[in-house]
Length: 275
Length: 351
Image (tube, rainbow over all chains, first blue to last red; front, side):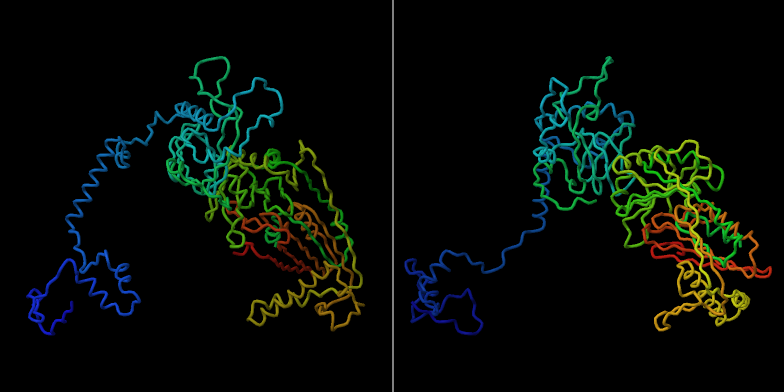
């Protein structure tokens, strides 16, 4: 089949095709136009049929720019997604940051800012450490050199770095800000960039993680939850420092992540540990 | 003149040289001067407990001064000045672990060094130019105790003007007598031209320049005499193309006596030396010079008159330069004096 190029001049593109040899142009599905046209015009290819089959057949070509989405439709879609996420959050019972600040969930009242009130939390943390690190139980005989009772700490580091520190007793060992050195307390809230601790003097302190090196202690032996305080003759150990323990250093500059993110994060080895 | 003298002597010195044209009376007076100081090796906390007994709460000057050094490789050092203030100069690692607020030194090369000022008196001076003063309280005691646990003992040089009731264990008493050296047949500058230069120095720039040149040659002579340089001898036969130095003219031939004390020299002894020099009636014309070098490793080498002002900051180092020299001339009832100070790099004494 051959065709003749349209004459130049203003032609109505919707007008009927001109007659060729006094015959109307006929298209048959058995002899489609496009394949013949492409094959006839790809003169440089060695195998026009192959070229057509690999590069044209089955492909969709956009002849014009796609229609843009209307702005109103976009806004409606966004609102719908937002409503859906809020409903999912409400169903899960999660409080937003603003709601939390408004309701004062993260604020401690004056009567709640007592070190003794957080000792049970610390005791829970000791139990958590016992399970996490699989600490051995206290030996029956107390004799022997302390060195023989030391556990292998090589495997503890990987677990500790992903552990939750709420309830841990931390101390600032070194810091670029000298005012922070020596601050010690039980962690009541850990955020991405700071520890909120309650000190033994019943003061709530916010200690930034950046530019500080912390020290925390882990019990040497398995520690069940501490018994409730009762007036007994023998003094009940109050914190991890009152029992055999191991101290670890925590570099704040490399620890600026939220507790939830830390659990799944891969920590790379860092060469510098300077503040 | 006494005010100037007392200003110059207001800190501990490492070495003092007194040079004068030979005079037996003055020589006897200065030779009899015995300087005492003590050394010990102990913790800073232990020393401070001992020193606090001798820090006066009311008087301007306390009876005890001290310097603590760790070693040539450690950059941590401290001193206890006569006003009862402890100044620590610590490196970056120590400052971050100590937990006491200080101020960094203002030089880029020594930004890591911090100076911490602690008052052992019951009161602190007012803050002066953003300087932070700490009072020696519980926090400071704990910080120093933690520091002592980590490091080895300090080598401490101290002097106490009062009688020591309870001495620190392992203290060693040192008595320093002046080393006398006599140089015979030396050229000693005549003081008269310098007197004339002084009287003319208030004139124009040329006179001031001449005066400066006169005095600098005089101080140069003092330095050469302290070194017992053979260039001062009258029979010095050195090739003039090799030896650049010639004693200032006019000069006379005479004998020079040099007395040197080395050690931990408290300002109390400088006071005695100056009293002896001023009171001795030496034959005229008499020229006496006193040259003192400070302890390079001390964080404080100069104390301002005003107790409320903090001492100027400096970088403690072994080869620090901090020397003052005083020349006192007396002739026929007239007297004049001149002093020169030489301060090295990284010292804020002059701004």
